[in-house]
Amino acid sequence: MERNKYQIGLDGGGTGTQVCVRCPSCEKEELFVLGPLNLNGQTKEKTRQTLRQLQEELHKRQLSEEDCTGIAMGAAGVSNPDTKEFLTVQMEEMGFSCPVLVYGDHETALAAELESCHGVILISGTGSICYGIDRQGNQVRTGGWGHLIDDRGSGYAIAVDILSSVVRAWDGRGEQTILTELVFEQLGIKELTELIHYIYAPERSKKEIASLAALIGKAGEQKDAVALNIQERTADALYEMVQAVHKKMPAEKELVLAGSVLKNNQRIQSSLIEKLNMEHPQWSIRTAQHSAATGALRLLDRTERQERI
Image 1 (cartoon, rainbow, N blue to C red):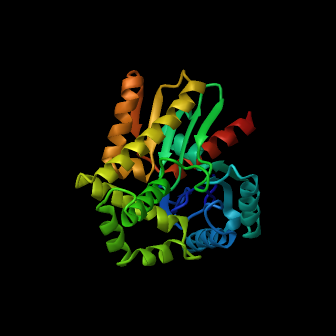
Image 2: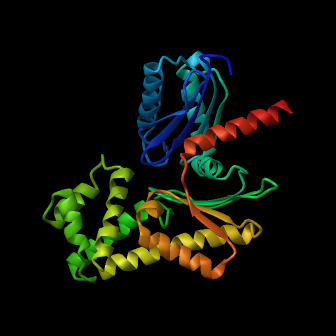
């Protein structure tokens, strides 16, 4: 690339968006974080706000829209066909005339971790998905269909299980759990009616609900039976997703674990790995180490190479 030219890789999720800017005038690739970028979990206006944040950050670095030679975006919710078109149009309206490639955030995450760009990745963050691609380029995915009908094994699903347990315990329909105390303490409330008001407030976001998932680890450390059960069910749900991909792609034996749930909850991660090792002792299983925004740039590079051939 010529001097002052640059490329952008984005990894947009339901909680936040990682950005990697690559340019020859920079000593190294620059990383920063913006707001969420998921049209299935937020309004179009909030997505526009995130993209405007991107523009502001570029201007701070004295990078102009016309000098951008390529943008690769990994975004949650691209299974919705309107998402790609919306994101592409938004970038054009902001003054970017370069190619804009939009991938699923699962594709960019896998590309960041596996230089060959084939293998399997399981992501459990705000949402959840398992995705695989083989040496021939065949792709398989399970899950990732959104929090209203799927996303089992995700942070959002854990939060819903927590809240359901709190309600059932309050009613006497379920087992008493320390999760009630932890939820009330985090939200600064004392009554169930306050919890209901919080949960069903029109402005309440998927991200805010999913943030309650972190409490499951605290309760599990105190051997709370309800919390331990939720964690085990979460591991089962994630195992089910991996198995579904494996049945359609049995030759791939490299698995990457990614996302905040698998990164921060050792019990869920360990339980999942134990289940997988029993069934697939020959697999190589490791946790993600790189920003998926760099994976977006790797996919951009691959596309450019293919177009030159």
